[in-house]
Image (cartoon, rainbow, N blue to C red; front, side):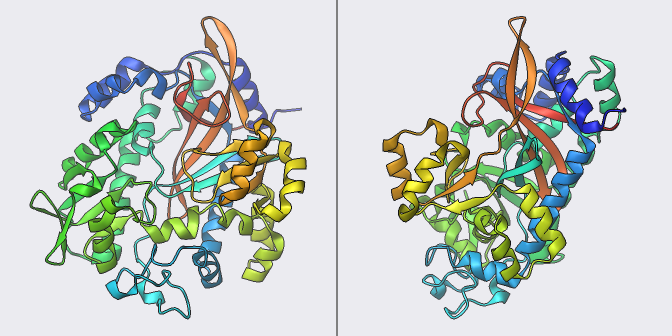
Length: 445
């Protein structure tokens, strides 16, 4: 019997351990993009793995189906009414009216109006999956997923170290095409809000950007924007000033903010000017607080994995089947359910509703009673454990299995790029020898 593409990919991930990354070529590409030296200072050896990850074409198609189903549900008015009810008052207020700061964004009956919703969608949604025995399982959704540009460059720095790698590399889109997708995405965000007005300056904003692990990517984006005729600046939100109906940094007016903050609702004092400009519609902010609330709040997974909730929202049977098969059952953690949660903890993964980057997330089988009590007092969800697949690599001439997370970079339901992260431990990290970002190579039967 002929192997399926999924089976071939699983075998290659186990047996094909040759190093496909041409680090010299990657270093040249990063240097040309303006990030080479900084990348070395940031520990480039832990950022990129030497191997690629093989994924069956059927699994890739299935992930795209799950993503499309989620985005179709998120477009439903009933969905938005339900999930925006979870947002704290004032955190996602109508950006068209400063007097609405006590109103949940789009909250019916509280003064919010649908026309106040941002027209732009949000750049770089990241849909993260594990490949389990049940197929792709969505672990979480991010609305400011990092690594998109780094992974586009990484994919083009691969060498055909063996026949399977050579065959898969021949089908990959060049990094220039992916970069064009990204530029088109930012321009589409701008046009959605400003029509034909010229886009002249973008601010890439994060807290203490020079200290961020992915700061090299900020430099790459700044140079990419500038090559396409758009001035770019990288800054902390506290460096922004809102005055005269506009957002400024060092005397230069900002048209669009590429938001890399994990202050998702723009609540901290450092984000005050950005928040005010967002409310006033003075700058296009992408991704924005509304996108995080509608897509990335972990509590949303409790609805997407609950058939009764999906029926109540008006989701059709076909989409329900896709979602229920592709999203592990997730429920909110409540103290009244403590006994059952503790008894079943070994099959659960606990995540903070507004968390990011695996911070304060715990596998139940490794949780102490003390941590469990903290989880009960926090705002958490419990997700049925979906174990990741594995990629075998050679470390010091010995085979080692690393865990695999798959990230789909998505804009308006379209998958732009799929990448992998290899790691050891409870959650993803960039500290594992042999781990880091890895390109995904599609395998067909």
